[in-house]
Image (cartoon, rainbow, N blue to C red; front, side):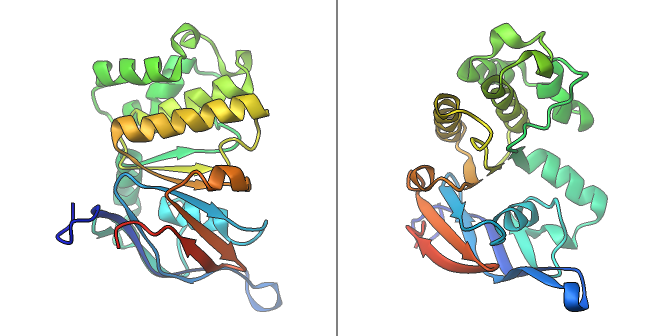
Length: 235
């Protein structure tokens, strides 16, 4: 909790901007975004295609570099870190869930889940791993390969992989966009459950207004600018 009695701030952006290309080919994907996200909150980011949603998400997670401005995670500006320091912070404090799963086809489900921990050279928390596997209902699929799973099952594995490092924040980019309605609803419910159980911040890009309205807060982007911000947390 912060000294005002609200939830503590986890992420803050300061003048965050991203420009692609130069001259006549220049595209301003994001323009001076000043935002904050509190611990344990659920924020949806909405807007038309090309409004800057995915760019913002990638910058929040250190997957891309801003043209100007910064992103602070737990008080550290991630773009003032070296590449190796930023990689370590991203691996340990940020979990990613993408629309197309990004699983390694040559690895089993079990190996895919543990890959971030192995890359970090850390010991696996077996009790925590077991809790994640149980929550996501994938115990019977641990020896399978990605190609042997349905889309919904692959997304469950992707969520497990995002959670296994005990991240402070989970960034989800259209996590239900490649799924049928039933599978999408199940994945969304699992993200809600994991956020509450493991006390994580969830920031989700979605085109589905119904999904967005289930969040604590909705940020709307238009032409790279924040045009709406409802249900702000911690004020």
